Amino acid sequence: MSTDSGGCFDTLAADTRWRIFTVEERRKVDAFVRRWKIKPGDRVLEPGCGAGRLTEVLAALTGPAGSVVAFDASPEFMRLTAQRALPPHVSLHTARVDALPLPPAFFDHVVCFNVFPHLTPLPETTRRLTAVLRPRGVFWIAHTRSQTFVNAVHREGPPEIHEHILPGPEELTRLLRDAGLGEIEIEDDAGFFLAHAVRLAPEVASVHPGNHV
Ligand SMILES: C[S@@+](CC[C@H](N)C(=O)[O-])C[C@H]1O[C@@H](n2cnc3c(N)ncnc32)[C@H](O)[C@@H]1O
Image (cartoon, rainbow, N blue to C red; front, side):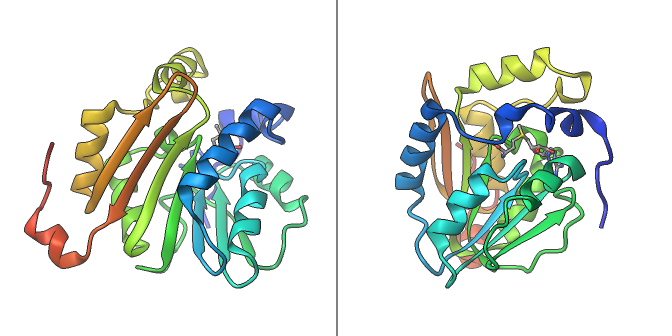
């Protein structure tokens, strides 16, 4: 399994703000949860789980009848997630998104929480993560800040993440459609960002290859 040893994310793991939600963040997460509609028995993939603060929430939503596969490229972040003593229906992996073997057409939801712009190159990653969704499975991109805020933080952050840009609605819609996703809804508010897209059945996706906005 390939890992990202060190790097800016291992440094970020030392920042305790990534370990728990503030009251304001928790309010936003609760609003996301109402939108995600993850139910007992669902299978959820969480790329870039960081210190596992959302993983706990996802595990409670799926319950033991479901499962959560959470992974992160940073060994330091994964060390913190492992310390949470998550229930047995959660499996944890230290891996980059392009290196973790994943079953095709398996998950009900892929939840990219505060991570999507880092999963470069975005077109390849989006296709890869779409392929692990079952038909009608849902791809979520959620941020507890607006697109403008996220991109400003990345542009001012460590050089490794200067180019990690959350695309605007038009470009993101094209990216998601090109990966075989449809029913795309994007909300960019002053306080959060949420994108929803559904994996189309293969026959629908092939009738509309790269159906652009
Ligand atoms: C901003 S943090 C967010 C962590 C977590 N989702 C949260 O909100 O608490 C981004 C995370 O993505 C991980 N990451 C960045 N690039 C990645 C990649 N290519 N594959 C897997 N994880 C990655 C980082 O190690 C980091 O933990």
